[in-house]
Length: 570
Ligand code: ADP
Picture: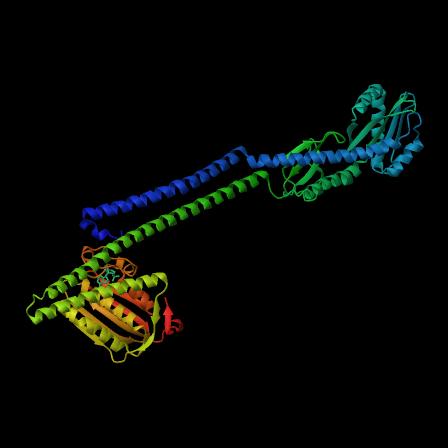
């Protein structure tokens, strides 16, 4: 794009150069794509595929369900342990077979309020059944006691012997015999569980079946809720991050029998049927306020968003890198053009100086006028050389951050006039109409005289270089409100609008064949802008192709303090 105007006029050498430039750029881009883009794209694609598989296999839910199952196993163990501790305590105090009587059983009941009924079945004596005396006044409880005792009478009569054998077998394996009962509560019923155990005499020969039934209200209001809370506390102590809630219900009924704090209803995520002390009950677990499906959906959505953001960042980074590489390559090309331009610019005046000096040295020139003309050419060419070298030196100082300005109180009118004076001859020699307008009211300014003169010369020199048939140069100096303006006007080739902001960049030259055929380094305007900005001003261009250009240096009458210092380093 930079040199599009020149394409039609490129020679074979330049075509080769442009091709090389493109090859280098493509090589860099390819390296970048292979080294960065491919691995990054592979990572993003793999991430997306992984997320898809999580979504398809419900991976998040499965992981949580495994965890939840663990919690339920712990809860089941805790509930059973608590129940069997209570049972063992009663069993230890239970009178041995044959000695069980109503008084001893009532004593046990009195000290163990969590028991509703206590009984012993002796094949010789039959069933001794006692219920919690304090609760017998309650007709509902009494109905429960009567129903329970008649159930036990019937059971033991028919299956007493076989139950004894079964209890013996289970005892050997260290297991308890539990069963559940529906305790009547009006037209409803309450969950109750009971335990059977063997009780023997001291000789170990005579066996009887003892049993106890948990109080239904104690289970519902104390044992179950406390056990569920204990499990959650244990989870928290372990540092589990996901807060879960637990519930206990009858296997075939979803109404909660007991819940942990925070239970908010809804469908449980995982369930586990309790085995052991509380047959017929099911433990359930869920997350409060959300479901695993919703959590998984959120996780996958967030992950996709993050992946998308990473991809965008990558794409952005790629575009930036691409732009940087293009810019660096363009700069490298501008620099190489600069070297060849400068060498060319140096060679021409040098060979002219040598040629004319040699001619003079040989003494072949007879007329004094001719001699004068040659001296003049040598002087002008050496001035051109000096200007070019000064530009390059200034540029290198600026690049190295070592450019210093020497600000002094200056009569701008005088400075502009004197600078133009030394150039006037050359301007007029080149056939230019020259107009110099210096206003009276221009105040003295604090400027670096040399730098200012160089800026003006660069602008005038450009006006000379980039004019064809309509040869006119106008220089105006005037005050405009708070600033002093120095204008250099020409009727030359002009500059396309889209190029106008670029011409102040270092090494930049408009891609026009007319410019291409004119000697130049692309440094002049970048220096002018630097110098003017160091003075707190700005340089502007107003131009149209074929109609000419106007460059304006605008300097503030009262420059900012930093620029008003005697010396400033750029
Ligand atoms: P150089 O003249 O050495 O190429 P400059 O930095 O002085 O470098 O100018 C940069 C470019 O701006 C020039 O190459 C030319 O294309 C354009 N330019 C500058 N001044 C004029 C002008 N007066 N008329 C037309 N084009 C100009």
